[in-house]
Length: 361
Image 1 (cartoon, rainbow, N blue to C red):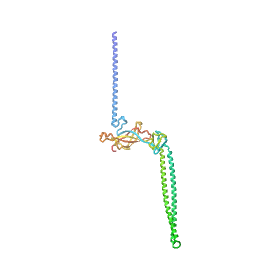
Image 2 (image 1 turned 45 degrees about the horizontal axis):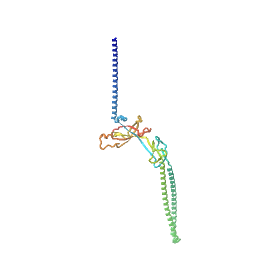
Image 3 (image 1 turned 45 degrees about the vertical axis):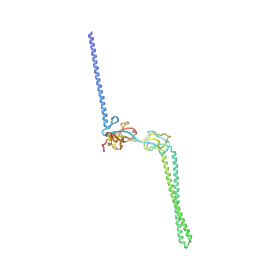
Image 4 (image 1 turned 30 degrees about the horizontal axis):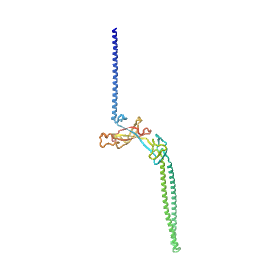
């Protein structure tokens, strides 16, 4: 009996040993797997570091955006657009018409706002009446000039007749007529000559009056034109087609010079302000194409071209500098971009890829 128990105990011990051996084998397998996973993670981390260093060597860290490929550079900046702050000019009155709000697209010449123009219209009517009066004065003086010129013509005929009468009297004074008659004919001829001289002077006066009346007419016309210009200033028009970015006024507000009403952006033609490192400056050219991308639309490439390269460094170097410091200088460039869909907005960050040309080309 004791032998049987001993045998059972031995078997039990064998089972425990077998179980312990199986458990040790399982732990070994799991350990090897963990080591393999850890090695794989370390390998991936090393590859990522190597990739980041590679991108840095190419000219742009992977952390800050797309890297430039061989023969290209990638520049970053912000989208800009023509922006105009609109206000009324030369007039001051309450705003009575303000139909547009922020975000509205308007065409060039669209009336964006009006001020109360009754005062300016009344002044225009007064000056239009003054112009009519001046025009009538010109006509009256021109009639006086014609009358004076007619009198001169009549005086010339009369003088000619009087001079002939005097000549006949002078020829007959010794026989047919008396000296008194001859003297009387002479006096009449002299009076006719004086009348001619007087009427000729009146012609000059009438001519001067016509010139003065025409000058007054021109002044009245200029004053009316000025009033019409002032009246036109009561309507605020869009200087170009664009999008209203900011509305800064309300109905009833006093509009006038220096009081902003709208800020208008030209979103059809925007540009990217970016910077090129000094070593790459000689490898980019005006008119060269550039591919522009944004974080907002990462899969859309916008076509642009370089329209401006600054002739001066953006940051002034020190008087004494090392070569390493010189190559950190940057130059501002401008890349024009067509934006018919208005996807690109002022202030939006963007990248541009530019092909590097051979220096000196």
